[in-house]
Image (spheres, rainbow over the protein chains, first blue to last red):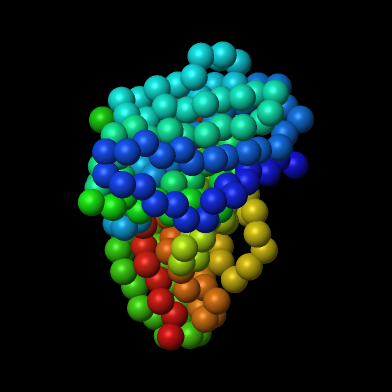
Length: 116
Length: 111
């Protein structure tokens, strides 16, 4: 069975600085998807970024980028130029490529506080 | 564009009362639908998912049930609520883009 681990329950960063959130996963699959979701205080889950395992290039979305290390089964999220609005809980998630149900397996989350 | 509606936003119910949370999706057809529960400060637990009308799969045996009476409608129910049913409930949908999109959630307090 697949598992997703986020080892940092809480992190903080100063506004305009860069922060990296860690995520590791365990799977025997070769092809899959990885996601980072953001949950601000409103608790609305928002997709931040997606990575296909068969793509070697790391995904980037404006100030958000990932460091995908397939062999190490690591999928970290880097937030550059942190803004107060980035304060949220961040979840890493895994999805099998061949899953017809689209089920996501989530980590336990990392609470990020951006300080002014 | 696709949108997902989930209601009510907040609900306070006594122990032993019934529950009905509704989720509807607009702008897409035959989506996969999901119900999650999230305890305070914790991760998401998948409760049910559905790949089509009348098709419900349960992930965790519990006091809740789900139904999908229409293609874009997903309902979470309980006949008698327990204290342990309190939490934040999220509905989500997905299609071939392999991305799940979430509703705004329902905060349920069972007293």
